[in-house]
Image (cartoon, rainbow, N blue to C red; front, side, top):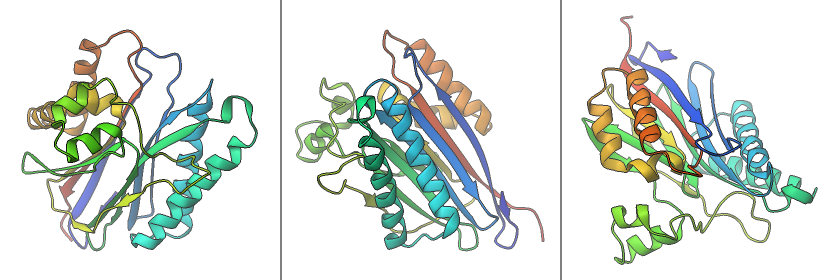
Length: 256
């Protein structure tokens, strides 16, 4: 997808595998209309097949809702995520394996005309922005260990291996109170930027340094995600989590 007036193009590539689990309960998706882009990753959890259902509901709600009224305004994105939460809660009412289902979410919304990016998330699926070989921004997880990092009890590496690293403080599928949803201020995109949306099955076993190093060692988007896949397979352990990455590479556009 491209915006020739402003001279940028966006290349996208995805990786999603079940790891050592029976089901892949992650979901990812992308929608664009030539001006607006929305990309998302969701990581479902719950009873048998419940996580798969929850993440799929979130994907449908976000892509359909954004397509109906594309906007990077904070209020619009907050309404979009609130609707996704309501959709998950509505299906929980069916009971059985769906009663306790939840889903994290990470999304990136882009206006190609203005080259602006806005990110939003709930839970521990992340959005990274890489610029000039470094991590320029990264979402902060809604998790117990992230609270420990903020309080100075842990550093990022300690949080990554902490036994309670999977305890979430927020996710979509909350009926009793609204889930925590963080939405960034608009970020101006530059040619050469790379946006990564991923579930914790990517960032937790690899860590930020490996994400950055492998990106620097890669000549293109496909090579980068292939490197991530190879690294994850080398680290595979019993009950390895699902892992999903959706990468958006911002390239210079063609001449007018």
